[in-house]
Length: 393
Image (cartoon, rainbow, N blue to C red; front, side):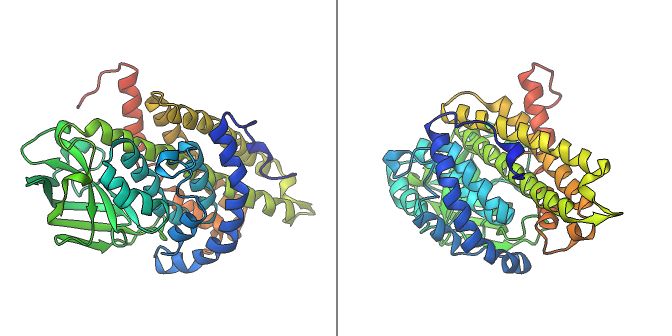
């Protein structure tokens, strides 16, 4: 039996899904041949392989979701989720450092200036620039309204000052999408997105070491009057919170595909193991104690894949998918943690070997319930959609 069989979710829903599936085989081969061999060293040295964006860009995988008029294939979040999924099968850390390309792509395509799209967008899609995301601060994570990094108007542009933490690609990015508050404005209404060129004076980044996604670059960033020209404001500087949340909500969609791939690839490795491992005169796949948790995991993975197809379809069609994304983001993140732990357990000591994919996946899955909006924040979003009273706004 093909271990992937339980996860087939039916024929493609639309042209974007059909395009994504046609390119999946090509990407999987490329990942196995050119990217997977880089993973052990990247994990050991906790560094992102800088050749990966160029590989993906030259093969057209960074532009799969971009509109045709921006030089892309026009297959939207559907195809971008496929790319993240296939990269995650080799390394969730490498996938994490590629995700900002798809987040910045949405910001520039929908809210960016023509000059910014020419300056950053097109070369980014070719893999010629490295982009990152900088939202979280030492004292502001889930509560985006309390961001304190300030954008002070200066001529036709802004100067950014403040501190960020857990910034993806902070030490390697050429361009960083930063959420900051325009000076003199309070609350969420004063927050906008600014595309910082990191070689500007006033930008400093220091690498953070972390337990999950070790092969992704993550940094603490300090801005000290770092200048951002007006054409690099993504959306409205004041009152841009709605567009900022739209861009960041798209991150949650592709984080679902990362959780899915962590679970699926671990399940496949566990199935291979239990079908070959013999104890007490039989394969351990014949034991009900092994069968039941793997069957439960297969059911969860099929549900996630099926729901993700619908979320991507709705997102690409411009439908309001905030509630569905919150549901699936929290569900998939927690399932990935449970499934990778289950797979480690049925594989015994082999599941604990540091170089095994299942062991790495189990470490990396722990980011899901807290990254890109914690499970509790997703529940809060749903509670507000249900009309429940919310204690603190």
